[in-house]
Image (tube, rainbow, N blue to C red; front, side, top):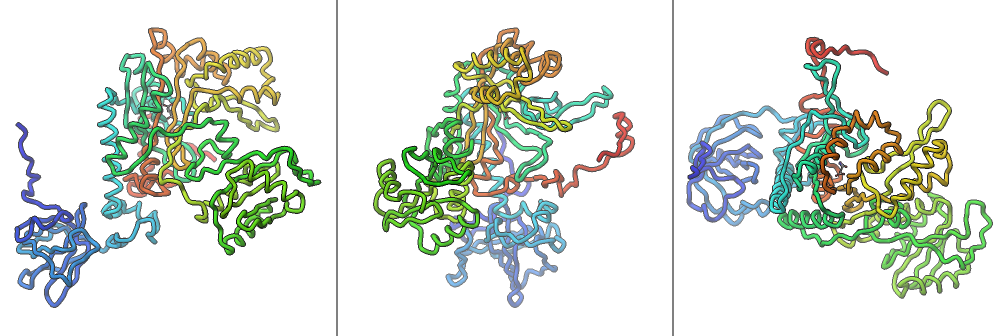
Length: 613
Ligand code: ASP
């Protein structure tokens, strides 16, 4: 039999949980002084714990020492209903107050570096410098909104674990002291003291171990995994972040889609967020062609459309290709005069060649107007689109940069809240990613071209594109210089993989693939991406060896949990949903990591520091 935990402080009641059931009852409260005021000898304290705030009344006869904000108190008192004129509708306990009978200051607080009793406002509007918040993160985390963020995170992860357990997945911890993983970023290295001169790499992902677990017959694995990547921190990246890492055997891509959809639906519904499944699936190529992005935000579903060739644009301008005219059709845009004028201004400032019109009054405008037959354009739009009465607006741009330009206009409309999102959370699968990318690097005065995996080297190819892989392999064997032939590069880039991304509101929140399990094919991929057999054996030999002993077909995915939580809670920064995040330069302002180490420690590791520039 389990014994009841009394948490030492028996009979404690959470501050934020005081309600009518406690009226006239004695309660014991612990918390921090959120606010206080003295009214002719009677002190009113807003006492706060992680659940909220309750008003404590200290009668005159209770002698108190000097009180400060954020002192830690113990209060024993009786719960009363507040007189009607004193009810505070802003807080959950606003109908009640606790008349103190006993009162103790358990710990004093020094004057605060910033106020934390301003939490009726949103932390998104805080005027405090973020570095100060991070420096005193323990104070910042006392904010109820920050607590709610941590609580949401905790619950989301709990529901994920519940769901995965129910689906027969095992959570297995993979090592932190590991060999480099294949995600393509820079590794954080850890020197080995017992084997001087050797290094572990902190995992960029559990990729290789999770594949080994499939060979081990675990069949269904997941892990709430910390991943570490030593990248130059672009906006809103963290050197360490958390993924829900998943791998499954004997499955197809669709099983992964279904699993993730069910997982998110289960976890989010439990958190009171409604999402619709299944998620839409769009092709990578379609996404690029119509949204100029591999992570389109379909809350604003305005694809780029190609203009019918037969429409004549009599434009004698080298920058324009008359055969390539593109447009976006914005239905129900309904701009006011003022909004329209501002938009015109924006178009002019950005030097965009454009044409728009509004059907309700048939108005044509834009720098291209005089070059087209407007009646022809009008009838074309009515024929090809759901173009009817009301406020409709169409942009037509014809230039080499049409994708960027059209997206620029769309983003202008989104940023200025002129387009309405169709829903709060738009999940979308982007499928059939290219297997390879071709990168150029300047070495001396030469440009070197290199083929690398778009996802990682263990990603399998779409079956029907497999012959192309053999073909480019052979061509490269014959003449490696063929990489400088643009047609060859086109062919390389056209090979589709079995990799997919999950996108939420235009942000990539998960990615994964079906893996290669054919060792010979894997060797060909290594060869194409310029990893020699020797290198492959050194780096990934253990995986290739394991594959010799019976490898099941398998695949997986990893979901970026920090980003998902931030998006669901409406933060533009993932730092708001991470307890102890680092700054852009990778510093923990609270602990001051990274820091110098003792000479002795370095000596033990055989490390001598030198200047680098
Ligand atoms: N390891 C991959 C990543 O972290 C995800 C996967 O392929 O499952 O992006």
